[in-house]
Length: 218
Image (cartoon, rainbow, N blue to C red; front, side, top):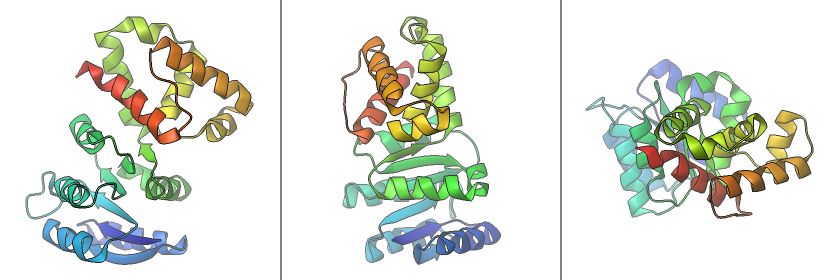
């Protein structure tokens, strides 16, 4: 699997290259600026891009904007964005086209190698990987704007909702909560019913539906 990596801090960039190579990823390019990223995405057509939000020369959201332009040129290009802090605006921009194959993680997640690599693979496969802190903030804001729908959920259903919104499959959620997959299937059906969301068997569509619901409070 070919990866284009964009990170301006040398030590972190070098560490990510070594980590991804250890898990059998091929590093097509490892760059440090927005212009370099733009050229690499256009010329190399990687399987997935792992991109720091803030890159030179602007050090604002250069990395994100390069990735979004690349997705407009190549719809569905898998992009996993890394950020130092939770920025809901960035998450919304990334999810706006509704095509999936996107992820938004805090840089702290990189230190959990298996979790980070799982997110890269999930995004590359067309799925969605959202940081738990992003989901928690969306849940909190949505609850403040309209408590009634979320209040319908049981504590266990809220746990399942958070994991579902991160992009996890029923099997993965069942493993984490140590329950049967059948029990998770029942919980997800209840969640969709209580939140008036269309039921879907496709993991990516259901994640996007949940995130769209949580983001209605903006």
